[in-house]
Amino acid sequence: MADTQTPVGLLRSGQAQGDWALDPAGTTVEFGVRHFWRLITVRGSFEQVEGSGTVGPDGSVSGQLTIRADSLNTRNKQRDKHLRSADFFDAEHHPDAVLTVTSAAPAGDDELTVAGTLAIAGHTQPVTFTARAEPDGEGAVTLRAELTLDRTAFGMTWGPLGMTAAEAAVTVKARFTRV
Image (tube, one colour):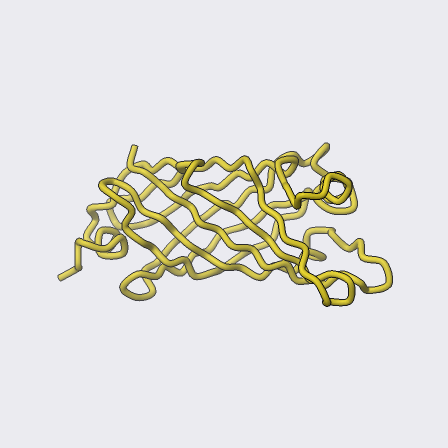
């Protein structure tokens, strides 16, 4: 019998069925990239995120997280302008980075194995990662995930003299409420 007190238990039991909306105020998307020959880490966040999810009667999960590329903030205006340029996010031509979730299967009492695609700067790549699910009040759940992305797979190859690592560490805390 499924533990219906946990988000994964609710998913397994079918009680999570329905539509879910992302709570932007309870959501953070942060990143870090090693720079200056990996001696420092440039950190930043995205300030505008929206999304939704659907859980089917069979526990199937689908959803989408849309991140405004021009909302990135590293606390350095000149660097932010460069990151929004065609060297990186190309926010003028590709204003959104979009994570499309095609499945999320229980992988333990509080973990989900999530699969889908990530589209950034006109490039789409498959992604798979583990998300930790936490109850967050009545009718709400928070998913936490850490991903390591190869930024060059998204056309972000700029980095003079090999100063910038190809890997970007991304941390997502996404709070969803039942609609």
